[in-house]
Image (cartoon, rainbow, N blue to C red; front, side, top):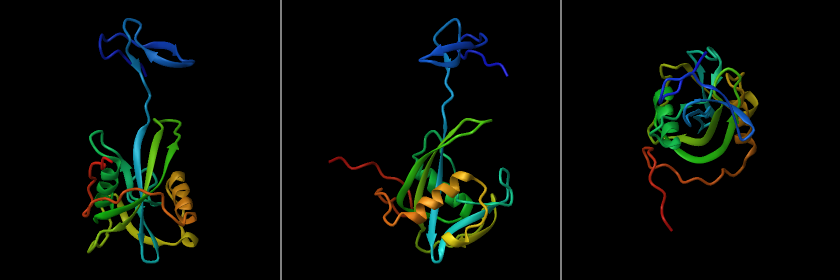
Length: 183
C-alpha cells in the first residue's frame, strides 16, 4: 500500500530518521509516524472475583475478556475505561486504582499502549451484557477461562498478585474524571 503526503500529494519515500526508517515526503518535512493506539482495560472487582465478558464480536469471538477498548482523541483514559464499561457491561463503575501501563505489540496493526484500571460497580449498578458481549461471568484467579487477548492475562495476573493497588485518584461518582488538584 502506498502512502502520500498530506500537504502536497507526493508519494512518500523511505527516509532514515534517528536510525529508523519511516515514510516521508521527498518535497517537504512531512513524516508518516506510526504512533501506537491507546486502549484501556478494566478489572471490575465484584463479590467472588472479577467480572469478564464473553465476546460476541471478533476478534476473539466466544472468548472471555476484560471490558475495555480504544481511547478517543478527546477523552481522558479513565473516562474511556468508564465509557467502555457502560457500553460492554451496561453498568457504570467507579475507578479505584491503576494496575499498570503496558506495551501491546502487534504485527499487522499499530501497536498499542494499554492502561489497566481496577474498578468496582457503582452503587446500584447491575451489570449485564452489552452488544459486544454474549454473557458475563465472575471468575477467581483459580477459575479464569481462556482469554481473548494475552494482555488481559498479564493484567489479571498482576491484579491478583498485587495486594495494594497502585495509587490513583478515584473517579467522581458516577464516574467521570476531574482535573488534577494543584498543590
